[in-house]
Amino acid sequence: MSKASLPRLLAILVLAGVFALLLRWLFVTTTRPPRIVKAEIEVAATALPAGRLITAGDLAWREIAADAVVKGEIVKGDAHAKQMLGAVVRHAVAAGAPMAEKDVVFPDDPGFLAAALAPGMRAVSVAIDDVTGNAGLILPGDHVDLLLTQRISETTGAPPKVASETILSGVRVIAVGSQFRTGDDEGRNGGHASRARTVTLEVDPHDGEKVAVATRLGQLSLALRSLATARPDTAAPPAAADVPVWGRDVSAAVRSLADEDETAPREEPRPSAPTLPQVFHGGQHRDSGTSEAVPQ
Image 1 (cartoon, rainbow, N blue to C red):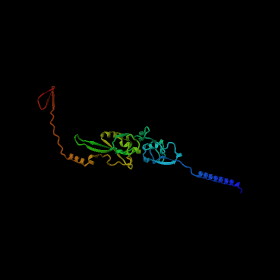
Image 2: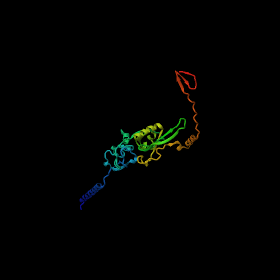
Image 3: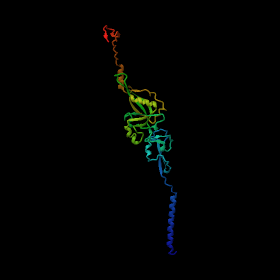
Image 4: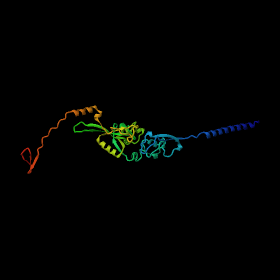
């Protein structure tokens, strides 16, 4: 081999190496799986009926390819994702179905309260405080019993009797104060709900009339029902549901006072003096027990 052909051979070897590296790079890039961008969309964790106030347990996140997201679906990180808690389901949504903006009415939308009411139902508000309203632990979507406590006096001057009774059972809370949402900043950890002075309940027209009367009779309180408690329309009512609880049922002191009132001798009413008949004659009248005429 001549010295002139040696550089040519080296150049050929270098080009062959570069070509081999180029082929390897092309092979790797064409066989590597493409990088897929993911997104998380909100789906119904369970079947959601129309008119339901959405809570955290009603929703779940599902990861899909970003290019598979349909316009209007609720994507994690969007502004609408933060408004889903407390929104109202506009129409029934099947379990596992993606949630879209068209499926709900957000709390800030006009007509939200009317959308939250079931057909034929009414919204009534009752005054509460931190004690009668469970210290702000009652939130929109909860079911409560409405209790009436009143003082009843049978006769003038007698000590009043205190009685409490449940006037409504299992009614749904629509709003607490002016808040419709159940987010962490307004929920059981504090916030606006704990300072609310009214609670709006969903009732039928007749129960709305009962609430209006009850507000005039005494103090109203709310009793939060367990999520595990069957709804009133499917559970048999307790036997003593219509029996009020009196003060003597819970206080030994009140029972003692009541027993003293029952055993104390009753003073017989004094007979009143007989009323003499009045006689009118010729423009004068006389008492039947005297002959003196009284001019008219």
